[in-house]
Image 1 (cartoon, rainbow, N blue to C red):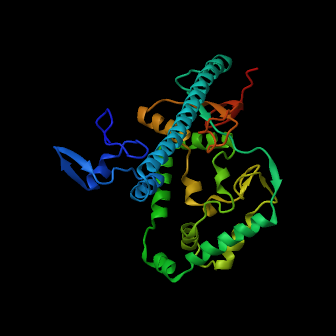
Image 2 (image 1 turned 135 degrees about the vertical axis):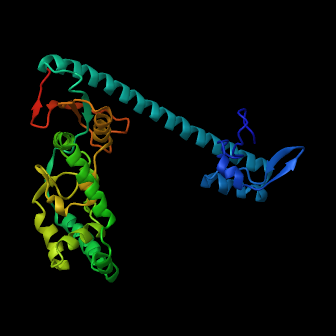
Image 3 (image 1 turned 60 degrees about the vertical axis):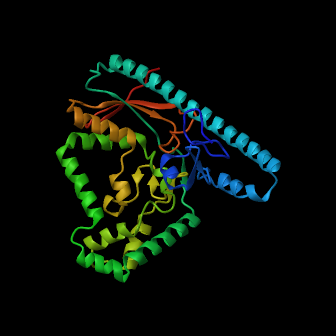
Length: 326
């Protein structure tokens, strides 16, 4: 099937078939026109329905195709509507952020070129007691990754590999921090205002892996497997933030930086990353930022649900000032 745009469409759902897939599809030439033997997209439902074409009556096949298309079209419409809601939400939030920035500039006598606006998510605000079931899951994960890190292959890696990839990434991050110290300090301040909006996906694994343990072993070769597991278990707090990483507490991460995963040590959300890259690229003289914290965490902030403003702040490398605009 060929659409009005000249693209080859799936015989089942009428979605355009990518050119890369067409190159791999067998075809014949009829009256100067390509006829593909199986003009179907990669969707499992379309593939399965097309395979049934030869075994069921034509009229029944057509009925099933019509039904399938209506389902697909319904999904597509729902998806487009949801995307429109997200776009509308983002547009509204951008307008609100700009309005807040204008108010903050006046209220705090700020130069807007030195204090651009930055919208950030927020971590959970409820504390709950750490349960034995969560500790058990965490211990099981630790036992697994520590066992892998103490395997023969891992031992060989520690001995033979001069600079493991995780060390290279860590060194690159530290070098960047030294080169742009003010930005590094400012980024840490931004993370403080967020209070762990990215930590909620840490669950009971905390992003720890055998690579984390390898790094610890390399720095502390005398530690035994049981010692390393004990280090992590002893660091656990009695109370943790609800629905978040097992090491997420009301005052931050329960782990020292040298025990955290490379992901946790190196990660900056897209909001902060884009802000920092813009400052470096423009060589801007930025003294701080007007920060607008919203109620959703990082991973929920991209959905269509409302995200209320929970705090407005002026952030500099030296301090974080809460500003009430009521």
